Length: 477
Image (cartoon, rainbow, N blue to C red; front, side):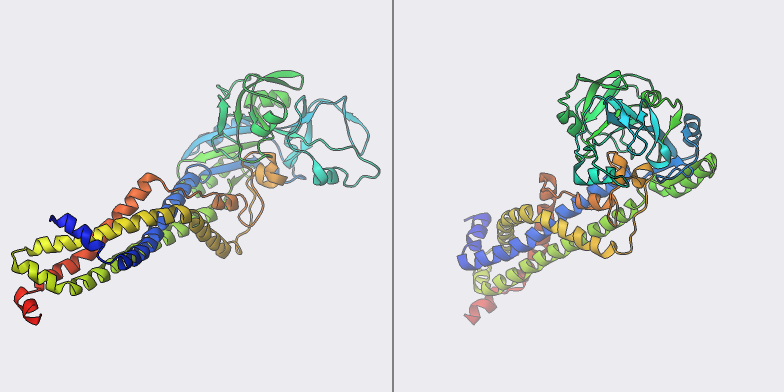
């Protein structure tokens, strides 16, 4: 009988004991694999945060944050000045528009006057111009919208139609600098030219039966839908993106910018670059803030979760190794007579030791199959529990900080990717958006580590067989 066949047979000598050992190993291995999956998922999220919003600065007009703010508008010349600062990799200008569904005229609820054409005064520092469109908003005003519209007025008020957010952008990114997720169609092509093209959010497109190639109007100008994007929320998808020059023309404010998104080459240079950009533009011209600075807390929290999951993975691996060690030591002691007989008939120590190592690997293989199933079911819950517990310990001392235009306006200023409420602001959603999925690569790496530890755990008992002398064993019998 071959060594492998003998090892497999020995593993099932006592079915009850084998089942118990496999069950214990499955729990340890399943926990190890789940922790490895959680570690990989959190690590990927940290890289995503660092690569997208962790290195952006937001530039607003000085004094322009807040609905009662003032100051002078930013200009394209100032964007060029910011782009010349060391460590700045890109500067994207934006122009905010407020699209109101076209009627016979928009009546001011307090004065009764009718307003036609572009108008300022909406949003931080009056930076959002109001223009008309034939689109219907995808978000209903509801109780809160109608209540806000009726604030300070008397008498019956007509049902309110919420505005649609439109943003002129200088690159294929959203208002925080994160790449737009275009689900169908293409981008706007050359974002530096004035063309009647638009990207439309999924919610707005569905509400107005728009597809790629459809047309709609803004300020009596016909625009063609080149792509549909998904910002992840219904409110964020109630939006339109056009090229920056086109938005400036619609607002009748050439060369004016609502905000600038400045991307820095690394997180290490963010603070120094922020200071340099502020000095280059002047404190009387611009306010420079780190875009969603509260994400530093999110990254720090996720790093803690990543470290905890790695420590737990190592501990679970060590536990599996100790289980194998104890089981094999017990088996060696039980089979002293059998080992003595094998040696007496000429079996080598290496052959006998290999037999025990292979037997342990059979048990580990069975435990790994069950453990992989446990990991696939439990990894998501474990990752969520780790993140939730770590968030609760750091949320108390954390306060929300505005992230430019989006952070200063309700619901993130109505822009996709805008700041959110809560102790972490937008970071709270990023923390809970970690998705732990068992990929074949991670699973294979985890099982390989388990087998390596199992071999190490089985080597010690295998080496003990070399110390067994056949004459002493047979004399004792």
